[in-house]
Length: 105
Length: 467
Image (cartoon, rainbow over all chains, first blue to last red; front, side, top):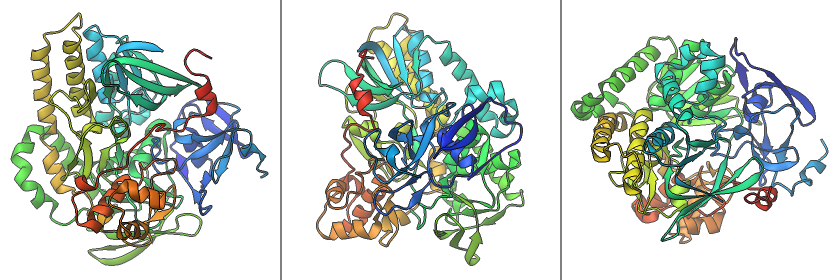
């Protein structure tokens, strides 16, 4: 998980992760914002179901794959936070858009 | 579809520098980049930090601040800049234009270009120690990325493990920012200075880099941070997430409680685009990785496809700036651009500057040699993070007769997950080379196919102007 240094100015942005509100700063990637908000696990692997978190933060490891606004397989480290976006963990292999949201939490 | 003289993939030092030079020569230029703002990894979020968080520049350091000038010249260059776009296919027909296909803002776009410059940079070498998939384990570069872009840092206790200039730089940035480092596990083999010595005379041409390196090493050794030397056999331990790290060092075995472990064993070219284009690659022994074969103007084995910057072999930001300029000037020459600024003279000047920047690399490669243990793995370590394939699985595939990565892929699915081999490609090549007693070049690498990034049906449907 991540902590923020003092004096990091920037506009506040609020979005949702697994239905819960998350506060971030404009310019944060979704992956960084989620780790800073205390979420250790962003996805579960298709094979063993083990929890994973971002490893590279620059778009190469694909460990930060989440569902954003109903679209699975989004790289959270390459997506900047936007107010009101709805983010969910990706559990296993992604379904088709719309399908993934059926997972009750 | 839109046409341009020169398309550039990547807006880091090489891409920005090439765009500026090509625009000066009068070429039309489109720069596509995955990141939300120009700067690449090294100068990530440079504009926002300069504008909004000037306090961060103090601990990010002067080499980071340097990026602001080129970013400003790039912004004023007149090159089209498409940030936040994901290139998922590139085609290079035998004759005629190249085509770059990308997803941008929910739609697919295609750019046709006379020449293509790949300036997509490097990635950190994957470090498949046991437990590296546990949440809480990241790369040093990952932590540096969030420090630059968001002023974020990993929770304490924080361990840095590995070797090389980036680790030293990040440690110095942490210390300057007041971020506590519990310990550094230095994996550099003993005798770094001795190994570097034969390369010192040549490296003196890059004396600025040498002085900076010495300063960084001193900053760390005088900081009071506990440093374990000659560390080997690192294991990340924990049930759901990282809890402890076990390792060997000169002082014997040790185990530390920790919340954050940052790994780093150097950087390697990001191979996806040059592999997708079937460019010729050579194994770089000193850096233990493949690099595309390039002419002295940066051209690959595919005509009018160029590579500049760390994607062609690791040289650092300033080398990338010069290489970008060289490639752009060559393209301008070739396409008879209107404002050719005495191309050959300029190219010679830029090549001299590039040579001076690269002079220090052999010394760095000797002092901080890439790890040999990765190719020797044979146990239960996960080496393909996506499909959870272990080193022992790869050995088994080799024993069953898989001669190379593509056959092993069919046996194991290693390289078939979402990262498409970015995280396991080098490791699989190294293990197979070891298992078969062959040179990595004979073993080869994954055959990379499009799409090289996930693309949605919606993005596909909204192809070019259909939106």
